[in-house]
Amino acid sequence: MRLFIFLLFTLFLLSSLEDESIGATSHSLKFGEHGEKKADLSIGKDVYERTCASCHNLGISGAIKINDKEAWKKHIHHGIDHMVESVIRGKGAMPARGGNPNLTDEEIEAAVHYIIKQAQ
Image (cartoon, rainbow, N blue to C red; front, side):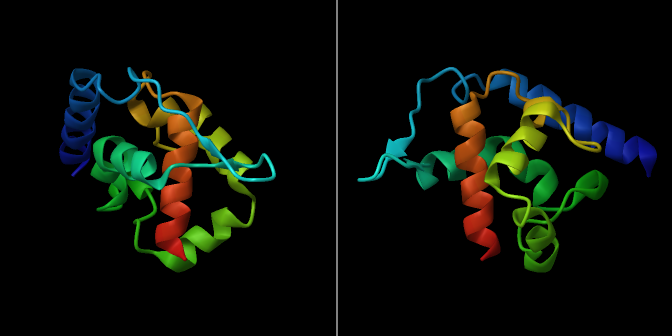
């Protein structure tokens, strides 16, 4: 079982290194009428599907499944900034930047917004 998880994780890392379209482009956050940042959910979905889904769709290595609303609530209450920082630095089995060093902070924030939207 450990070998299986290791192989899946290795495959995930290799696939994220091959795809330079995420992290290599300049995505920007939108701003609301009062100057607050609004993440583009289409960018967040794209980042999630290309980088995060390989673990969070199946719950690999303890990753919270995208559809586990109760589990996400425990993390969402810490706030978006805390969640973004956890992705940037890595947490548990999740490597820094979700294993894709090319992701910008804005793309990570957009992915976190997308995940929160799915958990509501």
